[in-house]
Length: 59
Image 1 (cartoon, rainbow, N blue to C red):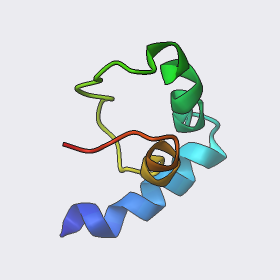
Image 2: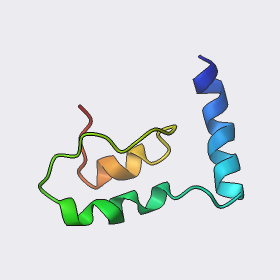
Image 3: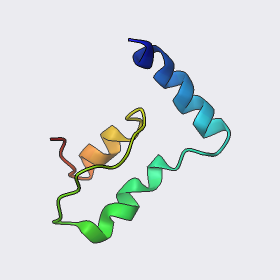
Image 4: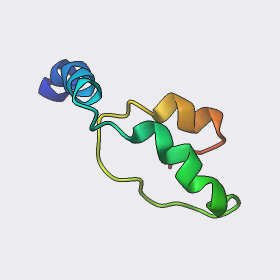
């Protein structure tokens, strides 16, 4: 529950201080097309919609 309350503020803070690089993840994964990626690391899931649109699946 605390995570759900904090996540939006954390994401906005990371964007304001230019530390959010999650938008680059689909670009970084491009050479791995057809491969199974087990973990993209931690985070709040801010990029989940973009990754899903790029064809990534959650297990």
